[in-house]
Amino acid sequence: MNGSGEEFDEKEEHIGKYINRLSKDIRYSINGYLLEKGYPMTGEQCRILGFIRFCNDNGSCVYQKDIENSFGIKRSSVASILSNMEKGGYIIREVDKNDARIKKVILTENGQKLQREIGLTIDMIENIITRNMSDKEKKELIRLTQLAISNIEASGLLGDCCGKGREKSKEKETSEQC
Image 1: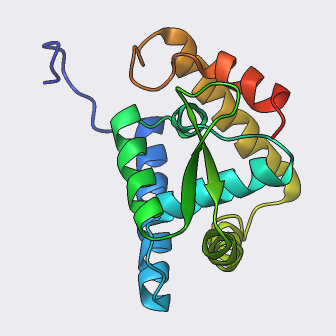
Image 2 (image 1 turned 135 degrees about the vertical axis):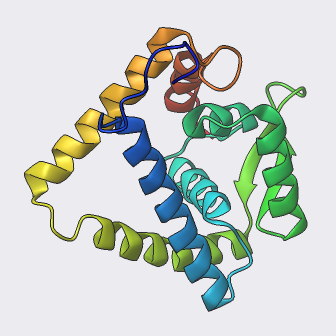
């Protein structure tokens, strides 16, 4: 029986089971490969480095809230991740000249170098994941995944966790230039 007292059909396929498994497999693969190569970061830290670099390269400032919203991570977790990255010398946090209450997140030279090296690792893992997919199938997977994310955000189930303020943050990301 499931939690609502109804019989649970073990034969029923659940999309979440596959999404969860793929997410874990990707995370374990990236973390294992990085550890094997001697890189001092988790896959999530690497993705955040890549996000910061992408935004900075395109002239956009990055704030902690942007990372929270783009990755769907709680504020306390992002604060901890950024603190570790700052201690490692990969980022600095600089007070915003227009609003002293917030800090911009900026890659250091070491962070830029490491992100370039790790970007190749992430590309390799992505190529493995999509090895037997056509371009059309890859685009469809992205489209369906984006649709699933939009559906869960629109449901209100995320509450105060990670989905709120995403639209405001996106406006800020694209409109504010560093």
